[in-house]
Each structure stands twice: as structure tokens, then as C-alpha cells.
Image 1 (spheres, rainbow, N blue to C red):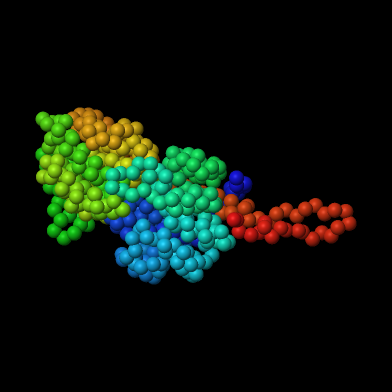
Image 2: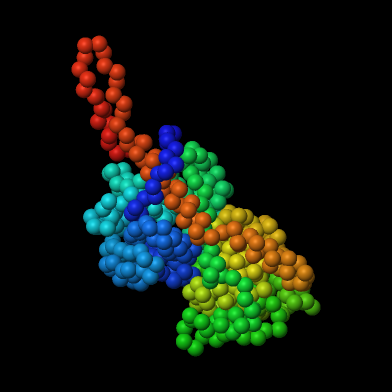
Length: 464
């Protein structure tokens, strides 16, 4: 149990913060490869900290998409891509190069004199823990996804997370000065699974960029969705005489793009004379993950053909934020059938655009989807998702109510709040680390003894 003294009311924000993400860069395109909500979160957090006067250094790995060296990001922070293993190494193989990454980070000039090191994902936590145990800066950890949770809800064709990751997460959680959690549910899970005290946890939810994600004319948005920010010659969504369903995310079993295709077919079967029979599904994202062979674009198109809905399934590549917002606005409902989800940023961004959400009742989606802003589906079968969609598509009044509820819910999430909560966490972490490494109090001198203070060497050594 950690004894943490509350920070002084006038305690200053840290001057220099390092954000650590081994496997993906904040400059990577979300929705493909290893890029997703974590990338969006990193970029928004870094920009927000810079706006508060904090110097931000981001450390990631040099890979096929990220050139080695230092890059000045447009948000005012620096990205340092370190050499650690071959650039084309797969995410699953990066564990073999974490020692090299930790060594490169420890020697990097920009890593010297940091007040806080905020690690994102378990591999970054493993590296950060090594530095913290050797007298480095205060360590703050964000997991973004937990191996035990993911393994409990594996999709067909997906591989379970290895025991090494489970062990690493446990050790990182226990040794971090503070763990930031996106939802109270994850905080409760960490407390129960690893025995973390309440003071070692802080709930700081992600935000949404309301300048990019906001309501707008769906017809105009549909014309821009396929083109804007996409590859040359990409077709716009164009006119359609039925509702549009949207799936956005990495095309991996965990996210359930195959469930989205099966849901479209189930909707048509359950509603042969209604709007469901004319619905189309737009899938935005790129192949990703260990089981991507079962959910890559070619397999999804083959599945759509097998189910007789190939003419109503459109798969387009990942889109930057401004173009993704157009796609949300062009959709009637955003479908999020994930098997597990730490939060579900797609659901939040869609609601900020006024688009109702039908999502799986799992993990952080219970928190991300607001009351009345759509439907949370407890049954993972496509028929259950189809039934939830029917309720929204067949009742315009209910859809309007859901749209208003979605906007109201999303309004409560901003990146400014995320930054404020993170800074409060950083202050707590710095205070906790100072308390843990403070010299032991000198024993009271016996009568006639000298006044020299006696400090145990163990009291000043890094935590074990």
C-alpha cells in the first residue's frame, strides 16, 4: 500500500512531460495498422499540454512509417523515433526489442530532466517501469486495453494475449506512481485484479475535438466522405434511397467488422419490406491485428457476397479526422460491435456529430454511449444488433431523440478536461514519488549521543 501525501493546493504543473508509446506514433493514421484511438489521444493530450505551457517530448519507435530522429509536430511538441529493432518488425515481435528501446530512451538527451513519464499501452509501461526503478521521473501509466479483458472476449480467429503481457501489466500497474483509467469500470477492474489502492488510480476520460466533430448537413457530408482526404479517385458515398450504417475502425476480429456485415444481412432478413432491406453499410478502416486474415477487406467482401449483400457494402480506407467527421454526419447510425473496448472513441465522435450509436454492451462502451443516444446490445449475435437498428430506423421520432441525446452526452467530453485531469494526475504522481523516495526520519538521539542523522541506505534507493 502506498502512502501518498495530498499535493499542496499551489503545487505547480510539471514543466517537462514525456509521453511514451513504443508501438505507434501520434502522427500515424488512425484506423489502420496499429493506429487507433490511442494515436488520437496522444496527439490531443500533447497539444493540450503544450497549450498549458508544458514542454512535451513524445518517444516512439522508428518503424516503416516513422523516420528515425526528431520531428517537430504541428501541435508544438517533438516526436523522437528511436532505433529499436528492424523498422518492419510486427507489433507482436516488439517485445524482443523493448530492452533496446529502454536503453535508447535512457541515453536520449530529450529524456533527461523529465518531471513525468506518461506511458501508453503495456509495452511502454514496461519500458517506463525500468527507468522509474532506476531513479527516473514519476511514472504514470495508461493501459488503453487490458490483456485479461481482451482474452475474456476473444473473437474467432484472434490469438490470446501471451502470459508475458499479463505478468508485465500486473507489475507495471503495481509499480507505477499512478494509473490513469478512462472509466470507473476499468479503475474498479484494476483495483480488484491487482489490488491497487484507490489513491493509485485516477479516472480521466478521453475527449472529442468539437471543432472537427459536430453536426452538419448529411447530404453534403455524404458527397465529401469518400473523397476528402482519401486516395485519388476514391468515390463519394453519393445518393442512396435507404439508410446508411457506418463502421469505423481497424479491421481486426476484436472490432467486429464481420459482425457489422452479418448485421446488415440480418437486418434485411428481419425487415424485408422496411428501410432495413435498403440499408447500406460503409466500412472505414484498414487491416490490423494478429487475426486480420479473417477480417481484411478481401475477406469482408467475400463474406458480403456469401450473405447476398455485396452490392450494399462499401469498404474505404482510413480517413483523417476532418474527413471521418463527414462520414459520421453522412450516416444514419454508427455501428460499434466490438468484442471488448477500453472506451470506444468512435462512439463518442459519432455522437458529437449527432449520429446515434448501436454498440456492444461491453467495457468502456457502457460509458462512451450516453443514455438514450442509441442502444447498447448485450447479445453479441448479429440478429440482436439488427433488432436494435430496426428500432431506430423505423421510428423517425426516436431517431431525433437519440440524436439530441447523443449531442448532449458528447458535449460533456472535451480534450481540455482530459488535459486538466491528466495534469492533476501528474501532480499526484510527482508527490507520490517524492514521498516514496523521501529519506527516513532520523531516530531520536539518546541522552549524550551525537546529533548526526542516521538514514538507512534502503530509504534512498529506488523502489524494488
